[in-house]
Image (cartoon, rainbow, N blue to C red; front, side):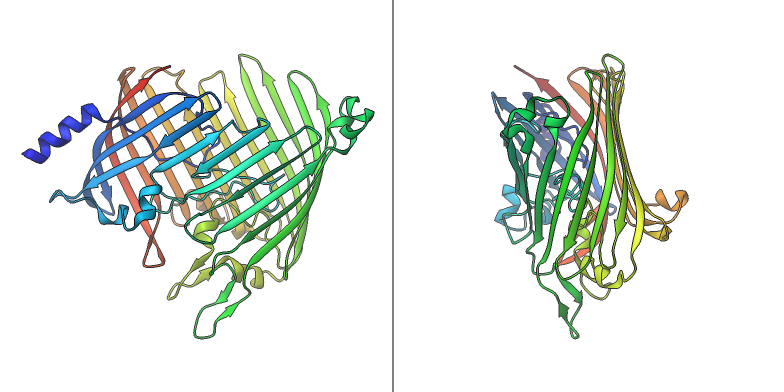
Length: 429
């Protein structure tokens, strides 16, 4: 009885936050308290849930927490959530200065959809493919007009993924920089590496083969071809080399349309030419899960490089947008001409706050599929979905479903999570 009273009181005093998804619409710059309570079913095991997630903004600065307390039926906190001191720091969702695409941007915490340059080396990387697998990392971007730099580091707890791209707009150094379109010419150099001890393992013990650190270097050049108030477009060329392995190139075009009050849409189409022993977008949304899986079900990303002994060609496409403020969406698909079983898919969508009484958000990632039917089967996928109803502006009744992975004794284990929740939302200036 005492436990029930505690949970009921907490539901009304503690707001709640949803798990961060790998989607591009983090709502920074707001002051909001969201939170509540519910029940988590993790692999059919029930836990009482209390959640708290404030987001605060002070000028250029902002911060957010993501605190989940899960109690077993005997009143004990779930031990898997707090195994060591680092788990307490992981409750920090982010601390930031500035916003993405501003001249100065720095963020500590979870990383979502991180991309370097045009994405041939790193595309939509995340350091938290699941709640329990989340890390504390950092990303930054500095743009000084004529030149700039962007970069990230994935995990302050242990060696991980690091990358940086420096770029220059050479024509802006002289008077040619004032010429429309021509002044936007940009060229960049990128280097990214994984310093994790498992990054280069090709075969496990007793016949251990380890290539060591995986390092990728690349270059790119982009040129704007349209620059109008409602439409802009650019073409680009990029190339990359995985040290001690293969290389690849890609040529692409992107369009961005802004029909004020009706729709904002972006389209990106890219033709990729992959040499042998080369994987495009090596650091992608699945990378933290693909890096290494120990025996008896051994898998590693580096072993795929060795096995990939044939060159290939493929197409990468991306679509993102907001339609009349009613729905936001993003989708990306990578296919290979002669390898139908190697396709990759990312989907995300949500109903923004402009839709009254209803809250819905979902993100889905799938890799290694051959056809439409296989693209939407859960094995080999990550799925997070939230559906809710708001009877009042401050109250949300919702259900979260998550199909993901967790780390247990150095091994990845499939995890299914279901959480009905009651949440309270308070926004303030």
